[in-house]
Amino acid sequence: MNIKTTIKVVKTTSENPDFVSLITALDKSLWERYPELKTNYWGNNVIEFNDNVVVIYKEDTPVACGCFKKYDKNTIEIKRMFVSPDARGLGLAQRILQELELLAKVQEFSISVLETLYKQKEAISLYQKVGYSIVDNYEPYVGLQNSICMRKQI
Image 1 (cartoon, rainbow, N blue to C red):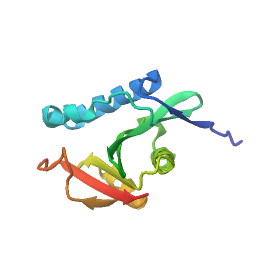
Image 2 (image 1 turned 135 degrees about the horizontal axis):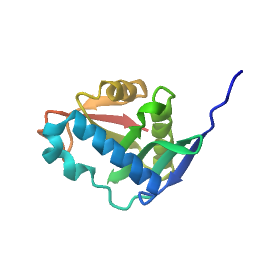
Image 3 (image 1 turned 90 degrees about the vertical axis):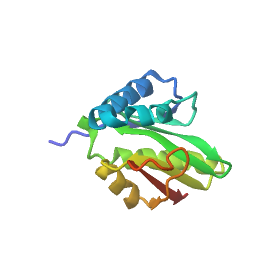
Image 4 (image 1 turned 135 degrees about the vertical axis):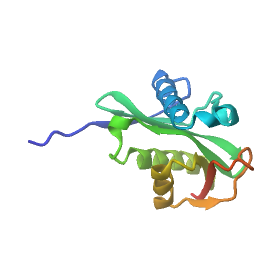
C-alpha cells in the first residue's frame, strides 16, 4: 500500500502565522546549537515585513520555510531557511530555494547570496549541490569567522 503525501507550496508574507511559528523553531534550534553566537547574530535575523516568503505544508502542517530580501539592485539574500526535523530528507529545502529563485528572477534579480554557519554541514552541502559557491563574507558578516557566505547566478 502506497500512501501519497500531499505537499503544498504557498507564497505568502512574513506576517503569516505559520512562517512566524517556523522561524521561531529555527531560532530555537540555532541558539541551542550555537549559544555563544546569539549576541553577534541576533540582529541579522530580524525580518521586517517581507512579501517574498514561501511556506511548505505537508498534509496541511507547515514544515518548511524561507524568504529573500533585496540585497542590492541585482541581488537577493536568502533568509530564514528552515525545514522541521520531521520533514527533512524530502527535498523541501531544495524546493524552497527553487521557488525563491524563481520569484527573484520574475522580479529581475540575477544573483542570490546567503549566509549560513560553519556547523550547518548539511545546508552547505545542499547549497553547493544546487549551484552556490563559497565566497568572501559580505556585509554584515565580514569578520565573522563562524559565517559561511555563498553566491549563485540565477
